Image 1: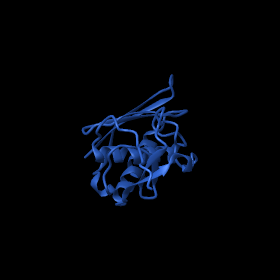
Image 2 (image 1 turned 90 degrees about the vertical axis):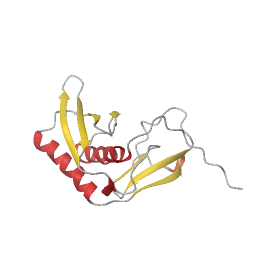
Image 3 (image 1 turned 90 degrees about the horizontal axis):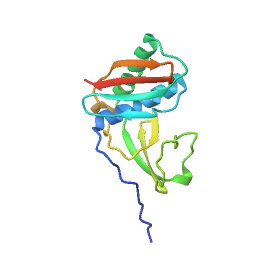
Length: 156
């Protein structure tokens, strides 16, 4: 007898290209700065923002390198796929589980952007990064008081 898999419901409908770009931005920030994925994100069709805890403000050159890397990954035409995995089998060293809501289901939906990124997510995504478009950082600002970098971005 096959067990029915129950996933948590999602509370909003994202614009798949922007939401997929957010995944790539998060992995890029983790790789380049050693920080965690964004602790706060607002993802919309026209423009979006993500907040990251960093010990110091990145330089203009570093922010350009972030934009360039995100676009490099997008241009790689990576498949975006999902896999249902029992939570107990997910390696927290590979998949950040810190932002999971209380009472999360025993089965997690992992979203893979090729071999570049994997994270637990119930949102909507493109099937291939070629569907995203060009990632553009509109602005960024850093608060030394809170150690938060906010990146505002859009797709063109």
